[in-house]
Image (cartoon, rainbow, N blue to C red; front, side, top):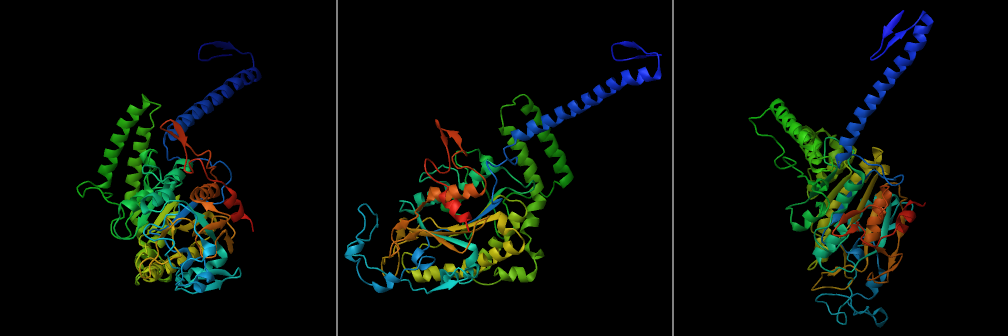
Length: 484
């Protein structure tokens, strides 16, 4: 008996000898097939590795999978929201006591420190939950979640003007052109959704220059920029295809464009831009179905919509934004930015804060309830902060000026332990004095809870490795937030 292989003629003298010798050949054939499959998979992995939106492994185990960043733009007053100061009532209308002389170099803009008079909060504070957390009447519905909140009363930086302060809180730098925190997160972790952008932003009213800073990618590749959504109507401008092109024709066109791009990319393996372009085209195509479905809140039960204040004044717009935020993280969106735009209480701080508190308190409380009920709060870190606080001294008749030297933020979910206060300001709420938390520390904490080491998340630009926290930031806050 004999049989012929690819290049050799082999003589065999029995069935047993045939099976012995051919067995090795069949095994080799199987191994070759598996290796060929591995080669195919390796090629696919290589192509995937060129896609900058591919999901990446975190530096260490994460507590949270996503972040909802509630930004109170304009600067809410710490002494009127989450940092009660009885001493202000005692000295209301009086100049600063001699024992409270301010440090040299403190910028009070048009307020002269030696003539400034203290102003007590017009809002009452109550204690909520088992923890007894003190919260202003402006957030009385949010107070029902006191045991889920960690309030940080000692935030600070040294930027007194809106523009640089917003840059700092959005991007970790007082300069323009730096990536927003959402872009850093997307750069570090990639996307977990195939049909929606992994970083989305929404804002009340007109989207101005200040709001746009919140989702720009700066010196990171443009693919990491956030996508701005509108709360009503078409969610994204220019997403719908021309009416004369149906989906089948669009698919054929996109396949041809991708084929040309792929052919071009095969000769330029080190150029990741084409892979990103292919990915963007495909994402946009899938979003034409996914984005309208995301925005269709009519499918939500009526009691859920009502809990957010949708269909009611003054909560309708921010309520829609918060409900959409929950729907986004439910669908795998990594970073959600929701902006309330007008907390700049220079003239009548009380009126300004009452108006804005009424807009956001009910929707934010509903967001936390909804996330918790759906089992999403543990994997979603909710953060609320502004670019700075406001002075404990009066400006004008009943206003308060900008104040970056001591202000409040709060966090919930994402594996943290609620019902606690971290840090403190002095007796009048002017300086952070205990467990001070710089903006860099806040950002480092957010990254840490996502499993990212803020010192290792770098991007080489203009001669050095850049990072969200610049040359500052520490993880001490994260450790305290997680501890019971």
